[in-house]
Image: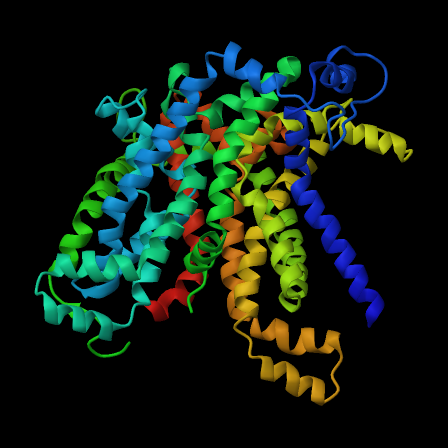
Length: 281
Length: 283
């Protein structure tokens, strides 16, 4: 029994290393000196003999690429801000509009409630291509194309956060709400002062997953934004080539940092959210 | 459903209203308009019946994209489910170590595809790192991006990104199996394999449908990875439905695109049916 156990453990460690490997490559790339980068990438760029090489630790770590990016790449910062604006606006809207909707679906009985719930479930699982044309047409009609609103508004009305928060609001015991209703007859106050605190795990899960989704979006800006100055980082970075490897690696790293911070601080909520959106208790 | 669990009343509808209005305005009504358009000629706006659908289905690019998408799902689904299930079963038994490894597997879920574009270029270039590694091992290099190998690069990217996601789902299913079942089996002298086949797998059956359906739907959304791997003009072995939609969009052939969107919507709805039946109890 002992041998297969260690064998599995070894396999899993290899897999886990593979999962982390691309990020490690990026990290070392961002801190490599230009000389080492051009040596490593030489066979790909200058058609010299041999193959590209890499090391997980740079020989002489330096911040030169990061500095070069900060000083000489004027196009980078507007895109970073675009990403921040879009993500921030989307998340704020999702909380303001989505949380009450989830509350209404979870804690009240009204006609067609099941139909609406089914609608949100189906919309949550539709690939973007299904609504791509319709989204484009409606944004065009209201001249929202080529503005950041074309990313924010459809994002705000995404079905996923509503469904996720619905699952969490559902699990609050009714007895607690009964006692809250003794204090106030106002349904909104019950939501605001009892529902929101008790369902906060669901809201944070929705924020974490929503952040990763929004920070990562490629299809939507590609379809709705022609103006390159409005692009978010997620659309801009894949257009960089290895020619200017230093700043490109540094830029990729800067785009990764917010996502890593959110991941590390919200790991448990991320897991809860993934599970809650899929499996019911 | 317990009695009195939900309060009757219109208040709930008012909570829902803003979100519902936005959804109707941005998603639902425009989509109904697209359904309508799918039966009209793009130029003269006359009723053409199913002509747009026929035109879309006859496009060779459509058939190629469908075939590639299907092939992609057929390859990825079993690989992803089996790999994540084994990792999940093993991690479930570890304590601290399992947590650390799970975090490592979940990490790619958080990594923006865009940040990895450059690394992927360097790794899969025909003179890139992977070929360098293969060369050291004495294996002939492969031109990853410009041959059918591109398809496997995409499969690998999908597995990389989604493994942790499925592991978390399996772990949730596994934690629902009562420990006493395992103990009883061990007392009866059942081996690890027998326990896995006779207890773990049958108990996971309800979770299986959900994990399968969600992974399948996520495999429709690999466009980001495809874009990461090959940009706008991929090798034809990884030309997916998403590329086709983008091309239609760029060529402004909205009539075909409308028909394609309706067809895709129907396919996804059909795939959702088993999931819906499981969710029935909840409503």
